[in-house]
Image (cartoon, rainbow, N blue to C red; front, side):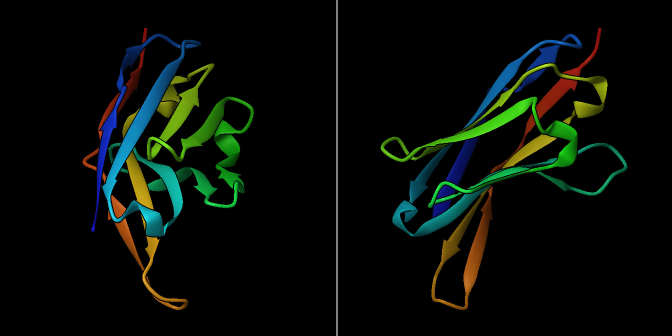
Length: 120
């Protein structure tokens, strides 16, 4: 079991910055991938950024160059630095952790979500 708690959401003006953090607890030694997803009203949840235990990253094209995902293994946290925010970044942001139970079977855990609103 892995528990995830997000923090850092809020209201910011266009062009501003926010930093989201996700603290993981529980069986974190088995977490292979951590990432951030978002869901805007009326839209499907989409990948924002992921980071593997080996350090590989993947970003949604819409956030490349503006968002940076990072991980602190000692603190079991994953962060998302969001710069040059746009109104279209407004969404509920969710932290996700993938635990490899076996070579062929994994379980995904989700945080409760944190609201990010970009508006003037």
